Every structure is written in C-alpha cells, then in structure tokens.
Length: 275
Image (cartoon, rainbow, N blue to C red; front, side):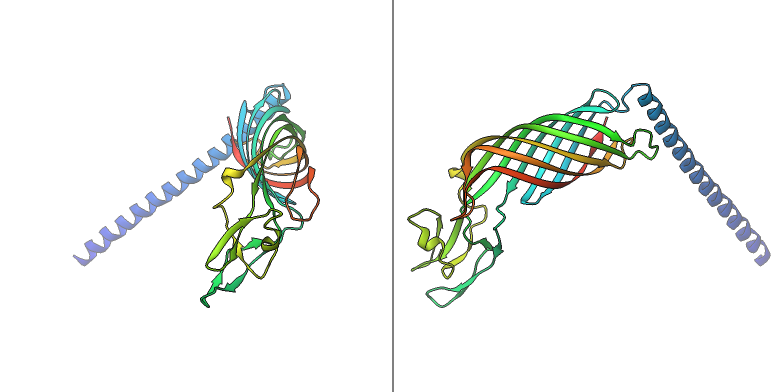
C-alpha cells in the first residue's frame, strides 16, 4: 500500500509540474508575441508617417503646470493634419501670484485669554488673481521623426483669450469682542496691515460675489517631450514661456505697483490618450 501511494503521489507531482511548465512556456510565448506585434505596429506607423499618413487622428490631454508665479491645470484637444502637425485647442485655469507673496502663520490671545490659531495668510495681499484661458494653436514635431522608441520633441504654440478674475483677499482679525473678517480698502488700511491683530486668512469662504472681470489675451510657446508618441497613452513633460496682457491693471499686493503685463515661465506634466 505504501508503495502504491508513493507511486500515485509521484505521478500526480509530475503531472502538476508538467502542467505548470506548459503554462509558463505559454505565458512566455504570449509575451513574446505581444512584443513582436507591438514592434510591428510601431514599424507600420513609422512607414505610414514616411508616406504622409498620420499615426493617430486626434488626442485628448490633461496637464498639471507649475509657473514661476503660480500653478495651473489645462485640457487640450488636438487634431492631426499631417504626420508632423496638429491643430490644438486648450482650456486652462491658473492662479497668478505676486513675487512678494509669502505665507505665514499666526496665533493670538482672545479677550477671554484663549490662544487662537489662525489659517495661514499672506501679509499685505490685496487681491487673488485667477486666469481662465481659451486658445488655439499648433503642435509641430521637430525631433524624433525616425526614432523607433517613440520619443518625440514637439514645438507647441498657443494664443487666445484670457479672462482675468480678481477676487478680494479677506483676513480674520482679533476684535473686541470676538473676531471680524475684512478686505483691504483705504478705510480698513490700518486694521488690515496690523500684524498684531491678524489671526489668519479666510481661505475660500469670502469674495466670490465680488469678483471683477478683466479681459485680456495671451500667447505662449514651449517644447513638449513625449516618451510614447507611438502609443495610445500620452506621457510627456513640457517646458515653456508665455505672456499675458489685460485691459486693466491688476492690484495684487498693498503698496506695490499694479500691472497689466504678466510674463510667465512654466513646466507641465502631460498625460492623456490618442485615437
């Protein structure tokens, strides 16, 4: 009986081992076939581009941007006109900060003797400046035309309308009794700039019904490095420079010159898909 059990166990082990080995070989074969199919697909795209046929018809992208004076988010839709040129449309939202802005925290004692910790605030900030942009432009492939690894360098240029949105900046003050929230005006200048009374900022609570519209225009240009230009998934980084001009001067910080012209350098992470 023991001999028969040992023989059965050995046969079962060999059967399982053979089945496992076949699955491993099958998995390796599938991976090899997928790799060959991908290489053939890329080679076919390269041949088509050499013959003037675009590899993809359109793309949809999102970008998170850091400016030297703020941050922004962008959506882009593109249509390929040739293997190397695309027409693009962009929608962008950003916040423009003043170079003298510096966030700081505060704490103070209330009239009842309690220690109050306030939200971070920017001392002397008068207005928050948002930008909503809509523009048309061109994306042109200038490098990597025959690179089988799919790395492409694009020159991107976009221009259009920019809606400047100016929202008053509110702070919270230690008052008698309790606290009060104020924005800057010549009447509130003394309280607004009294750092000993400031508890903190009010965040996103106030000022939305007081937004002022300031129309303008913008133009920007940059280089986009796409590490997967023959894939349906877009993975890229973009460096560039832009200028914005508004019909009215924007006041951002108390006792600092207002301005209409805003030059901006930026870097953006780009991701999306092609079809």
